[in-house]
Amino acid sequence: MPSFKVRAASVGMTAFLLGRAKDACLNRQTCKFNLQVVLLFFYNDLVMSETSFEAEVLEFAQAVGLLVRCARAAATSNELSWTETAVLNRLAREGPATTAELARAQGMRPQSMRTIVASLEGLGMVARRAHATDGRQVNLELTEKGKAEQKSSTDAKRTWLAQGMGKLSAEERETMFATGRLMRRLVEGGQ
Image (cartoon, rainbow, N blue to C red; front, top):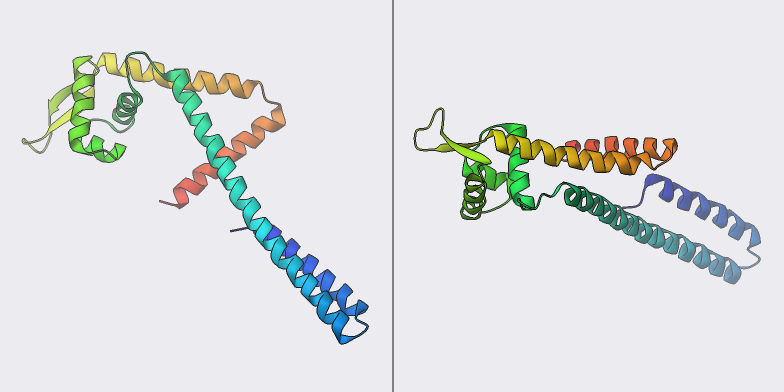
């Protein structure tokens, strides 16, 4: 959907052209032709605005995706996959969790998450602990090695981003920071 400013500009331009067409009307045929031209211009302007808006949204989404991939690549250890790193981040951020909770958080099937958890457990990054309230369940939590790996990964991402943003002008950095605030508002508004 195009922004309000784009629509307002289109409506304003159409009103201006309608006024000019009315002034130029010498007979009904010319007036009819001028009105058709104005309406065609208005329709094309809206279609072009919507197409342009959609293209801008797509380009923005691709840029955000590229930024995320580059940050992940900067933080990737040779030891862990992206999903394993995401599990470590989830455990560091929200504390102990069951395999099912981790699977839901990652949008995976529990069977697939069990494989990830087994790998992390084998590397000494997570440990199993009895669930506090349900004896049938087991919580997974970070070990000291897992905490160190997660912190190292997070620090690498932040360092990469800070170095990249350090190359921007002060005005560009402020634009990036404002964009970050808008993106947070967009995400929080959608939940």
